[in-house]
Length: 363
Length: 255
Image 1 (tube, each protein chain N blue to C red):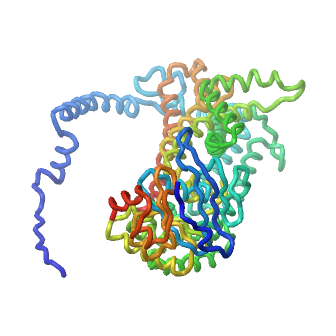
Image 2 (tube, chains in turn cyan, purple):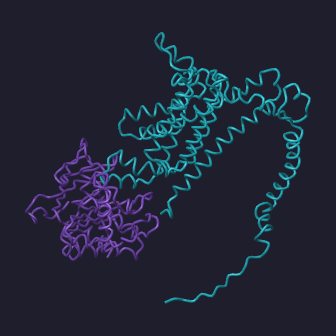
Image 3 (cartoon, rainbow over the protein chains, first blue to last red):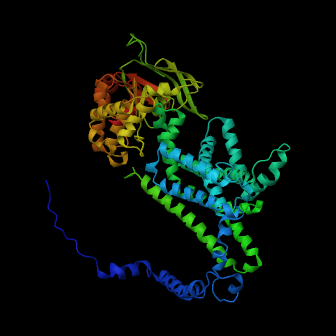
């Protein structure tokens, strides 16, 4: 039996839709908000033209440091004239195409793999080849490439290297630690708890110091472990502890019934985790996980403390040259833009994944 | 406590489930007290009792979602003990249907069904899918195969959950209040599927308050209260002539 319903829909009042509606709704929605809108508007009028004047109108782009001191506006020359040192640091000048190619390979691989539906065994092998060729390009010593000590690795390639492998290795390690912390086996559980609490209890700087100063003292005479590798390890161990706690949150947020249903089907522990629990738990914790990964990316700048020259430290070195002292604002803005670009990309990517994993109409 | 004879009624054959003097505690709290139960292959048992009486806990002990602390539980010839290495083997033979369905929300209905056969039974994917479709037809929702659990109704979800268990071709099916989370109009569709299953000869232990179901299907009805089996009888006698005072009180409240 169907009932005819007359369509009585009429248009909403004009003041509620369109531009006026939007302005009312978003900018002047109540006294306090109206006040905030006006204050912010005034502030913007004061600041934006000044910034534009400084950054673009009065600025110079390709001058020497001396000429820069004569101008009122921004001296972007500090960036443009030192760009190669800023990006590549102490990597031998004539070989700097090598880290450049390595970075291009890394970025294109990342862009290519961003759609997880494309992930396959073949792509995995491609990654192995890519990683190997990046290693060869950076290190040299093969295929007629001159060997370059890892102590010379610096600038943006170092930052990307430390963050990429830091994130890549700490994520699975963190997941394993989180599972270990929930283990029924007392020794495994105790180890994971102690590890997580110990690492979270100290600042990253301490770990970096220990890896670079204290750790070599315990090694037998003549044995040395690469400094970059030690810093890398410290970053991985540190980040993993934080990931572990976030993942544990996801594991606990899952309904107990999911564990029970998986168990009663006869799945083994690892099948249960891999097929049922982790796919759901890791999805829940995407936002905090990405938060940790982003801060791990930025924390790589702390390697300055053990005299590794990441992109922030090469910038600092440039500013120590008398010709360029005083232009730190410009130089740091440039580095900030690079960091922002990377972090924002990560953030956007996580949003995208979250959306794709959203299964329709949750119960 | 009083139990009527049960093992004597069906003297032939080995019981598929045997619970002997089983006790369970949650810390200090004594949830199950001296439980004795034998279930023959193809027998259908309905367990009822007030909430908190230990009925769910008892059937959850049978596939060791809960551990018991004293006594013996022997399922399909294997005794459930603490150092049992492959509890998975026992669980694969014991299907379980939960009150809240517990379907895997990140998988399609078809994938929910094929998961067990593929990973536990090592069945080829294609074969597992055919099996899954077969059981979806038995529970009467083959057209929903490619939807996600969140997209179908509660009654349909519970039928998917039953089909998921059946895909493992279990020897025993446990039902833990399968209809208590459902809207009234959906209860029947689930019970119908369970009645079909009973007619096929499945060994079933069902915790439920659906007394109509108990009357039509059960070989025995067990009444539990305060962690004990208070009374046990075949359905007609159980409903028409309850022996124990607590059983009479309970039946007067729910009928």
